[in-house]
Each structure stands twice: as structure tokens, then as C-alpha cells.
Image 1 (cartoon, one colour):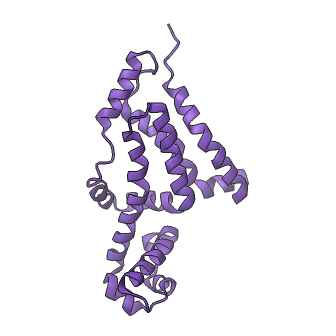
Image 2 (tube, rainbow, N blue to C red):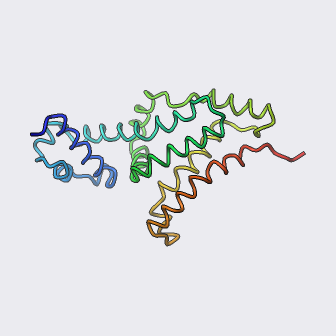
Length: 205
């Protein structure tokens, strides 16, 4: 016989599957209940409302995607090594949960306040430390001068866009799922190379 904890976990797993693929508006509580193997009344007993269930799923999605990835940038490794770790962590997570980035991005735009509330409690990144690393590297002649925000925008966009836009890119390029997965595997190796090129100091006199 299922315990309350088992039932709640089954509900959350089913809700993840439905919300990740359909978003808030497209999700139906009956479909979530069916996926969890319970009736709709029991679903409401545990989570009261669609909003409450969605909030739990969205908070878990952000926690799954953001803190582990950004933790790589807080290590004491050289910046180039941290970039490789960031890319590996992001690609590993998203390949395990392929609908995750699109879901998070869509809901960030639908309800930016909720995302800000969740992220505000995570202390994801010490931006000043990252800027100091970039500045010190530039002082040593290893990097070009670069704002930390611009560095992050480059790193995030190069890593995230291929997953967020996967279906569109497959339609545009005519790639099958297997072919696109191979392209993503290639990109995992290429992103750190591209970031290294962006960081190279200018040779202009």
C-alpha cells in the first residue's frame, strides 16, 4: 500500500511530465491524476489547486537547473576549467530532462515575479567575484577586458539556445532526433573553445 510520501512523489512526477510538455495553460489536473494512478479528488487533497501544484513543480525545476550549474562558477578552478564544468553540468541536466529549459524560459516570461522570488533565495552567483577573475586575467594579459554580465550572456546563450530552440532548429535543418543529439554532443565540446576565443586578448595595436 502506498504511503502518503509515495503518493505525493507520484503526483509530482506526473505533474512534471505534464507541465514540462504542456505548460501551465495546457495542463489538465485529470491528466496529472491519471499519470499518478489516483483520482482527481485525491490529487486535490494533496495539492488543493492547480496553482499550488504548479508552484511546487516550477520551484523544483528551477532548483534542478540553476543552482548545480551555477555552482560550477563558484569553484576555485581556473576560469576556463569552470567554463567546461558549467557546460558539462548544463548539458548533462538538460539531456536528462529535455523539456526543462523550454518550460523554465516560458514560465519566466509568463510570470517573471515567481521566477524572481525563487531565484532571489538561491544566491546563485557572486558576480563581483566573476568580474574580479576576468579583470585579473586581463591584467595578466590572458583575457581581453570583458564585463561579467556579457561573459555570462555569451556562456548561457551558447549553452541554452540549442535546447530551448531544439524543435525549431530540427524543423529548419531537417535533422532527425538522433542527428540533432549528435550535433548537441559536438556543441558540448565546442562551447568552451568558443568562450576561450572570446576571452583571448585583442592583438590589435
